[in-house]
Image (tube, rainbow, N blue to C red):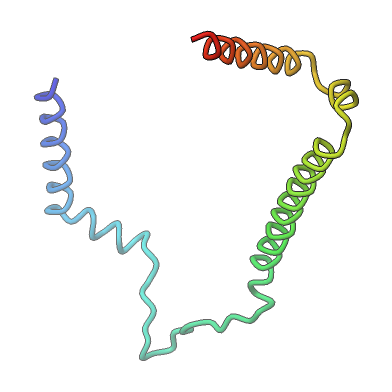
Length: 123
């Protein structure tokens, strides 16, 4: 398998070398590559950019900054509200708002702690 890959690589290198030696690459450069700018002559030179030329980039940056900040502060507010709710709500209301799967998991954890405490108390 490796010899087949090696043969293809050698064939490709030889093919590129033949194209270079026969002048095809130089001809393709003359036909399709852009002409180099003449700095001494009448070339256009470098164009000066204004702020209005790149205002789209700043708009995208501003929109991304506002969107990210909005998501960050929304998440911060929601986590803070949940923490406050859990701290100040009475246990009966907190249990009523809790999903059944979470209730079952907390009950199983409480039972495991009681069994562990009983085992340590006996021994």
